Image 1 (cartoon, rainbow, N blue to C red):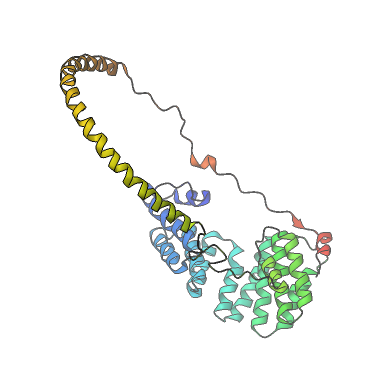
Image 2 (image 1 turned 90 degrees about the vertical axis):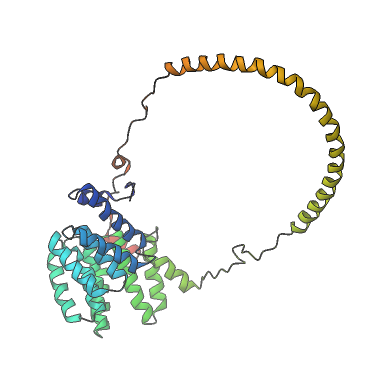
Length: 335
């Protein structure tokens, strides 16, 4: 892979257990998987699999295979890899995405059992919200739409509400989508608007959904973006200038031919005088070469002054998690 400055610090830490050569190969496949997962998830999955075959005991390779398989729609493989990852790390935070895989495979009963495990084991508030969204989705998939709505609404109305902002925005979006499907456009609009207010960076799709509800649709074609068919009004003027320049050039060439004949005669006379000067110049060049050799012996190579900087020192620590949404703020963006 050459330089590894783009590699996440956590990835580099896990690869330290491998030999230098193997770490470089595995790291290259993992970085390729990261770069391709949105553009070509199937190719990203093959890169992740190549990394897993070389370092199957590393959680990071299992995670890469699971995420790329999920992106490629290979839900059985994704589920299997998430299960292995859960055993390797002992973390229940993968349970929500495992439930999502089970939903895609129409294994709803198994998904409900896994949700019960997650409710008992998950302590991260953001992951708890993700599990709740998946739980509502399972109920809706099973035809229990009212129960799915109740799960989301009851969490939004909970008196002790204290969610991370992004998780709360995702909860609002999930609830708004249900409202929209039921034809409650105004209520859905307010829910999406509430999500936008606590997600100004646009991580959730709330702003895009608001634009759709407002009828704001951007439909640009090549002409709007200054395509190749645009004509330059100055193009004809440029051609005319080139024709005039060609005519002037022909006249100048005739005059130059006459001057050249006169210059050739003068050059022949100067050539004889230059031959005598060349002999004297050769002697001066020999003396100059001797002086340069003496100077070269005095030049010593110098070591670079710039200190080598560890790329890790240039990587800033991740920002602290966002402040949670308090009950008072939730009431301001209530739906």
